[in-house]
Amino acid sequence: MKSYLCLLTLLSASFGLLAADGQNPSNAERSQDDKSATNKISKTYQAGSGRYQIVIDTSNAPDLTKWADETLAPVAQEWYPKLVQMLPSEGFEAITNFAIRFREMRRGIPAATSRGGVSCNIEWFRQNLKGEAVGAVVHELVHVVQDYGWGGRTNNANVRRTRTPGWVVEGIPDYIRWFLYEPQSKGAEITARNLGRVKYDTGYRPTGNFLNWVTETYDKGIIAKINAAARQGKYEDSLWQNYTGKTIQALGDEWRETNAKRLGIDLAQLDAKTASEAKAKKEGWITLFNGKDFNGWHNFKTNTVRAGWQVKEGVLVCADPHNAGDLCTSNQFGAFELELDYNISPGGNSGIMFHVTDEGRSAWATGPEFQLEDNAKAADPQRCGWLYALYQPPQDPKTGKPFDATKPAGEWNHVRLLVTPEKCEHEINGVKYFEYVIGSDDFKERVAKS
Ligand SMILES: [Zn+2]
Image (cartoon, rainbow, N blue to C red; front, side, top):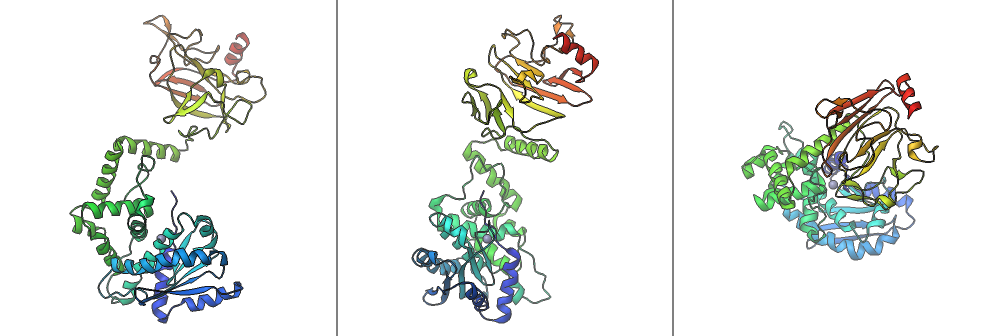
């Protein structure tokens, strides 16, 4: 998700400065810019019947002047007064005079609002002129109007002021931008791809989506009320309950449920999956297959993946065994614990080879193999879960044959393979088959006989 980083601390500190010197502080800054720019290019635009003056300065990027004049300025002139009207509060008067300046900024920050003015990253705007450029400025104009330092300047110093959380500070501009300024772009949609990662307080676009939902579902005027409280230094999470009858947590859950229903997703299942992935990552597990592409994989002794291997609905599939070959991880592992689920076709024969190197002519020349096959129909006498030609599980007294914990072809089976210098273990569907030690006398004897 692309997100706009705004300099929040500067936002409030700088508006404090604006009040302190009582004039547009951009004059001081502008003289600094003058030194680096050869020719000053700055134009003042009137907005709101002359009530507001917006300076657009492209001295450092003359190539953006035409776009700023023809495309950006009309939007700023139309939307700044609108935003002021949308976000009123008692006793508050929005800044009447500020600048939008194009300057060199750190990569990754499209724009920022500070010291009563908007700074736009020249490089980012050059690359996004036809896309998100104007909307990014609309987002910043909302910050100019929010002016959440206002309460600090006007309130009695003895009154306790609350800090407005970042998700509200950034959610309101993204709500206005994506749902009022450019709803046709659908830039803040909740989809099957992002539902697992979003919460009401994620900030930016997801929060913008949440705020739109609360507005449409509960209270058309809630954004203005929340904004007014934030500006006065009185924001509390309990406000949501005052205005809607539901806690912010309950609203957030309901919003996600509504989206899950619309998308036909089982939310409990999705959240369990997200939680287990997060836990696995925290515990040091590495996800070998990302469910999307072959990143981290290649065919034996190549840098490519043959067409017989495909990703279908998040599953790694051998769709054409005649054009597949052995697939290898790009990362190398010494001691490891591997867990995976497999589903084999009738008569299928496959396997998991480990410690494979590029030295042999085939993958099996260097790597021992955890055999995978359809025990019912495959021709190979080496059965599923065995260490190929070396180890097999003990006899099952019920059948008189080596133990078999596999499910029939077409069903999912879980594999656990532990490989460490101390011991190795093979498990199928939670049933341990055997253990062995690579390089032990017993192991060497079996290799010699194989
Ligand atoms: Zn922002």
